[in-house]
Image 1: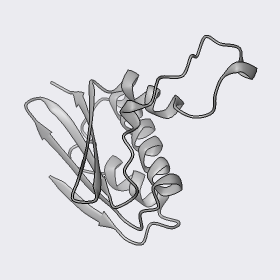
Image 2 (image 1 turned 90 degrees about the horizontal axis):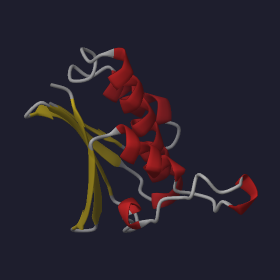
Image 3 (image 1 turned 120 degrees about the vertical axis):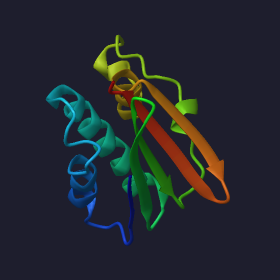
Image 4 (image 1 turned 90 degrees about the vertical axis):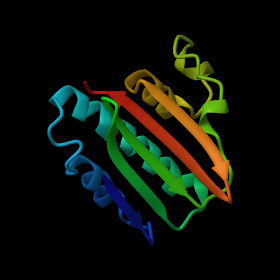
Length: 131
């Protein structure tokens, strides 16, 4: 299991992504799965860095019951991205609202996403079947 806290966050985008991608849990996975993991990790950590106001992120990466689990914890403002309505990707570009594409991407590429807010912390967990 990988457990790592990043504090402070500023300028550490690549380090956060590479930490997950180089973990013992992710490196043996097929290239197509690694691609999906990377895109989703980039999206989630970028949202936390840009919008949450948190000064730290704690990551947990582990394999359980044939599933890769990636959990993000931060101390930012409470925000459940799963409550946001999915954007209408069939609408013309000029009629689309800003935001929501990254979480939609994660919903499509991962097998499950879950969120909870507890003790002043956001917890977003991504799961991908690997067995």
